[in-house]
Each structure stands twice: as C-alpha cells, then as structure tokens.
Length: 463
Image: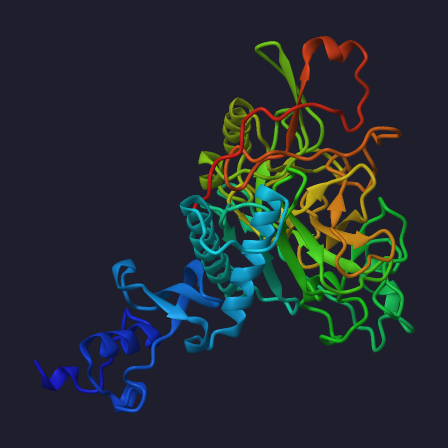
C-alpha cells in the first residue's frame, strides 16, 4: 500500500501563515516554514482592540494573529512596528469620535462601546480584504477591483459569486458563429465590411477603441473564427474591463456602489453586464415598476439583492423559471432582472447571485454609462451581450451609474427633470434598490426618480 502512495501529495488545508502560527504556539522551530530560534518569538499584530493613555504614554490592546482573544495584551506604542495598522486605528477612532462627540482628540480611556466599535471595524476590514482578494482571484479581466467601506459596519455580501461571462440555464442554446472575417486590417481595409458589414451594420469603433455609433445601434465585434488577432480594433468588449474599479459603500443610504479609480474617456467601454440568461414571458422588468401592496406602490429601480433571492443565480434560464423567479422577486419587493429587448422581449439576464462588478452599479437619472447591445460569437439577436460605455469623460474617483430604465435597444427610459436621485436602503447586507410611494401619489406620479422612504431598515454587520 505504501509503495502505491510514492510520489503522491496532498494539499494542506492550512495556509502558510497558519502553519507558522502553530509552530510559534508550540514553540517549535521549523526551517521549512522559516521559523527559527531568532524569529520564534516574533508576533504579528492582527488588529488593535483598545487604547489608553497613562502619564503621556500610549498603550494599545493588541490582538495577536494566531492567538485567541484571551491572549491579547496591552503594549506600549514603542513596542509596535505595525505603522499601517496604527494609522488605520487612529483614523477610525477619530472618525467615530467626530460622529459621536463632534471632536477628534482621543480621550485617555475609551468607553466600552467605542472600543467594541473599533474591534468590529477591524474585523470588517479583514473580511472586506479577504473578499477583495477573492474577487481579484476570480476576475479574468485586466482591471483590478478594490473594496472599501468607510460608512458603516456592513461586510461582504453573503450570497454573491463573481463570474466573467454569462451563464446559460436549461432549455436555452447559444449557437456559435460559423464564419469569421478575412480582413487584413479590420478598421482601415475591412473585407466585405468586416463582421459588422456581414450583418449589414456599421463598424462600431474608432482607432482608440471608442464607440462611434449612436445608442440603440448594435455592435458586431470580430469573433473566434476571424483571421484577425487579439489586437484587432474590433475586439473591445471581449477584452473585458480595462480600468481599476472600486466597490464602495455609499454615504447616502444607497448601499454599495462602484467608482472608477482611473480617468475614463468619453465613449470608452467600461464593463459588461453579465449574469444568467432567462426566458421571459411576464412583465417583471428592470426599471420602474409599480406594485400595489398594502397601500403602497414599490417603484423598483434595480439590480441588487442579497437575501434568499441571492441563491437564485444569474444565468440564462427558461420562461417557466423566469416566471417563477419574477414572482419571488415581486413578493420580496426586489429585482435583478435586465430585459434583453433589442428585437423582442424574450430573454432576461438575472443577476441575483452570479455576476461581475456591474452587480453593484447604482441607478441615476443622469447616468454616465450607456447600454449597447453587442454580438460576438453568438449572433442570435434575442441574446445580445450588454455592454456599458461612458457617455462622457468620467473623472477618477467618480461613481459609475446607469439608468435602470434604459431599454436593451439603447433607448432611455423616463428621466427626472427636477427630482434628486435617491437610491436604496439595504434590507439585507447587499440590497435591492427601491423606493416606496403611497398609492394616492400615483394620480400625480410621473415616471421620474420619485422621492420616498425605504421599505425595510438596514440590517447589522455580517462578517
């Protein structure tokens, strides 16, 4: 038996750091893990739990990595070399003191509630950092993803799976394109109009990769059967997200949002809306819907939910499945459903569970992203890929938004002329976007961004 196991290896379930911590706990040297007598008693700060000042000397209650809370110790500042953790601790402390007492100077002793908040904040940061690492490990695109929450204690969504391409549900078939272009230079010398010309449409991009078609016209990119290579100017959406983006917690009650960390030029591709295709036969639609329920009407605006809906998925599904999910979403007062209505309203993308960073993009009546229908390896006009392009130059640090009432064909839904945009409160750690209006308001209601109050209060932190 032992002879049959020669050359076999088994992955360790513990990380490198965890194994090092075990060595230090057992006071054992292990050269293979880099633990020697010289660094056996070097300990790493996981986070800081409390603060006090005695005779002008600052002390911190330290949670040591790999050790239980009961082993935390008070240490003078000169013993701590964790500059980044110290700076973040004081930044969180000052921010919370300003919020509570309108002053930033720390007292000599922290009250228990303030110390507990700082511990919860430190745990949240660790959870968000792990989630950020998971997102970047799964992404196949160039642009990096960062995560930040400087607003509350909510952690990562409990039910969200990052994907890079559409998922296809049962009963739906994506037919792969049979032919490709024979162009030597698709932009300057297209043979037969290249792939767009073969479908009787115009070439979509200029030499900088910026879309030059008006909204509503389809984009036909070169496909896997084309002679042109990866650098072809007619391969833009298929290259994925090129910009570094940040998932951040909004400070005005709209839950999570997305901001760009780089300047984005006007008409540039930003991201694709990916999820689960579904066959669609009922009037549950992304955008403003009206549902009468116990004297209120939900004006649903959106694509975000983290509850039981989150377990339903984002992929292509059948009409019957879409009907079932729409009824569940309606009962919950939420929707992640994006209609593919370029030629006919047959299929829908459901983003409740599977999705990419577009899952977190908020609504605006004055958006900086525009929807375009894109066809690459599948030319079925009922199943376009949904791409977002910048409607104007977007500055670094600016939030990305699109109008949830945009039609799949590129049209725009109702726009607000006077109302401010209001988003959503989180009924769950990842939320759906909605507002409530009294039924009596319908008499004078116009399809714009309405004012209202959230249906449910936000929940507490989830780590």
